[in-house]
Length: 331
Image (cartoon, rainbow, N blue to C red; front, side):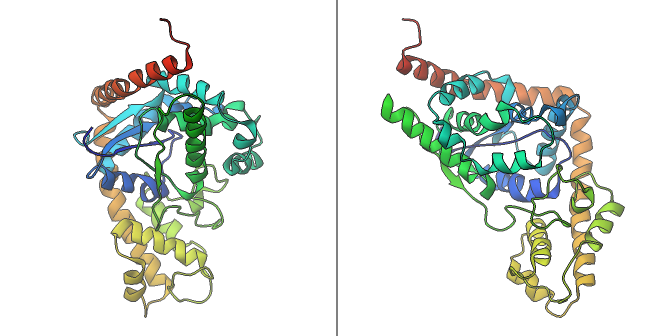
């Protein structure tokens, strides 16, 4: 590959929201213009909480792929693969489990956050999933991994485990660098501003889903809580307005300062109405593209087949190298 290599993935949990686009997929569209990119539907990560995807995951996989295409991922510039199609991912995941100190894995803050919210039985898979994430990126000798702030610690774990393996055996794993998007990297729930916009929220009125109707989008944005200052500024004292500004910037590509200047003499009502218009006009087109792609499953399967072939051409030699270095391959 002539360009630096990028790997990233999204879980097929269903019901994509605007935060997925602004925080991840929009960044992917830019990266495919500059790098060799492999994007993955990481379904093995999704089953770490099996109760949430039982009976849904197959449909979710095709939905997510159709959304990728609707947003503009170009299969002539990027490859898309299904994680579970390639057994090299869990294979290396197990090996890296054996090189990950328990204390290091136990420091992952996202595991603690998730388990504090879960009422279901907490699985070992949920605890170990950052190690599978490490396998996902180390398999490909990635140069760059786009991550949100909440995932940065997991990439640091991948680097730590790779260094541990490299120093104990041979330096066969490249240490990937994180690429963190600053503005809009973590869109917040409209009603629970301290939390990321996520399907796991108990209250869906604070989540702008990609498939939301025009009516629901307007209702959610116009009724979103704000402070009483009636001043459209981006600061820590106005987190609700800051979140709406991030959404506005994420959809329009205007800078925060440009948006602040535009609404310097406007009230919250005008700002929210304009934002609702912008979000709906954007999503209306995306929804149309989604319906076109989701109706052609043979085409979606063709894309996944091509992605798998591309993936295994890289990972099969890497697994052979790992086995040889460990001494577990037959001679």
